[in-house]
Amino acid sequence: MSQSPSRPLLQIEELSKIFHIRQGFSSQEFHAVDHASIVIESDKPEIFAIVGESGSGKTTLAKMVLGMEVASQGILRYRDRVINDLSNKEMKTWFYNEVQPVFQDPFAAFSPLKRIDRYLYETVYNYKMVEDKKEAPRYINEVLSEVGLTLAEIAGRYPNELSGGQAQRVAIARALITKPSLIVADEPVSMLDASLRMSIVNMFRKLKEDNEVSVIYITHDLATAYYAGDRIAVMLRGWIVELGPTEQVLGNPLHPYTQNLKTSIPSINVGETWKDKIDLAVIEADEYTRTGCKFAGRCPAVMDICQDNIPPNVVHGGRTVKCFLYDENVDPAKKTYLTPAAT
Ligand SMILES: Nc1ncnc2c1ncn2[C@@H]1O[C@H](COP(=O)(O)OP(=O)(O)OP(=O)(O)O)[C@@H](O)[C@H]1O
Ligand SMILES: [Mg+2]
Image 1: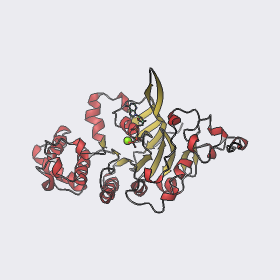
Image 2 (image 1 turned 90 degrees about the vertical axis):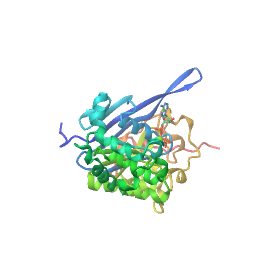
Image 3 (image 1 turned 60 degrees about the vertical axis):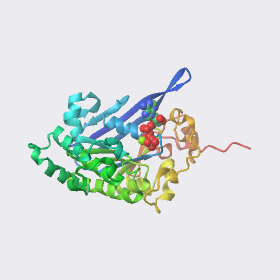
């Protein structure tokens, strides 16, 4: 077996999270994340966008990567370690040095009663980022400059004295204090004005270029995903239905689900969201649990084979696409389209 030159930064392979839905007295299992695979290499920082409608499993996937949810099945490694096997001590002293979260609501991360610079000082001290406490202001100033702020601007201020954009910048600065290699940002711009979104996303790009930080960027905002994402994964009911270079996946989508987006790409504007563009009128209740393709019930290209068989991940056109349309192993005779019922 050939060995890759260096271990991936993050290896997600066939990863699943199973939850139980209670229905009366019984409960039914469903996969919130269903055999998802993503590899982020350690020698090539990237912005990896994850998009998908509400409930597609983006946050659940992010939480597993952050060690906040235990995976039910599959492989989940950060560098050479299985994330679920890390002790609390290793999580604190190593993992959270390397992997940092940024969440949707910057204000939720800060107590309204505590001055915001205290958070930065505490993180610097807790992670022993300076040898002498006297060096902390200089260190914090350096980190704040990465997000376009200075310590003088925020010192002594309480969270409610900051704008949403400023608070999110401070939250990102806090994430940068430990000099992480990976930031997992779950909808980091969705509570900000459209005009501020690009500036935050540009910051991620700059961090990637200047500091070699990779960012998992989860969003409903296709414009920023298109603009910032080097690669993108499109999620549908726990599956990754298409994964590849963003320009290809959004510019020339192959999966019928991603193709719903195509019309929005040329005129893509900041602030346009997934829901603005995708017709979500007919989401089938059984999509999580149906036997064949989860998209079969709403797919304009549905074929007989899709009804009872799970589509494979086919490598096609420079990306991975989970769809029988591109599966050369299937007898073309079986790829028949469903004929409309006779009237
Ligand atoms: N702790 C839990 N227990 C049971 N079900 C859960 C739990 N957490 C999430 N789910 C379910 O898992 C599915 C995926 O949820 P998740 O929050 O990961 O989706 P999402 O893609 O982040 O959605 P959104 O875009 O709305 O943030 C949803 O059906 C959700 O209700
Ligand atoms: Mg979410």
